[in-house]
Length: 146
Image (cartoon, rainbow, N blue to C red; front, side, top):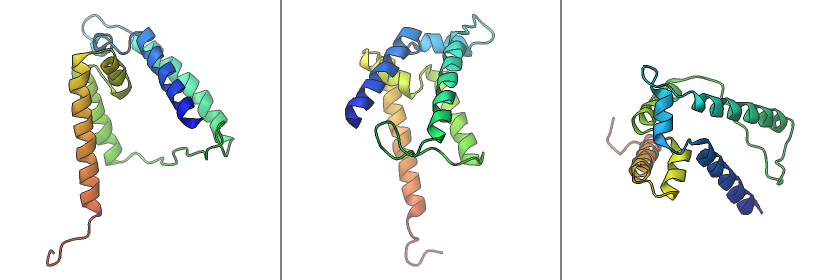
């Protein structure tokens, strides 16, 4: 049941991205182009998403299990640290260069957009690099190393 619900949620999310035009990198770059022909539609879509998710998080905080019976795992971190700021900056730079973020890129990939394939490959490489660096940080030092 969880897999089916996840699939349906992903399909609704992808459909929303398509209908709102957010799977089109030109639309996103139009929002980021403050000195040219600025397109505010992304702000409207984001505002709607923030409003809906704020209500969902308010409801979720009052629950110990999800509607499907899974344990609630809400974020607890409140600290703004270097990793968060650097990650946000990298995300913003990639978003500004490509006009894609992960969700819309996967939707555009499903629509056969070649730029989305390049983005997805770069995104997976970045995720792999992050995991490798995290793994290396957790490895004990080699014998004889200072």
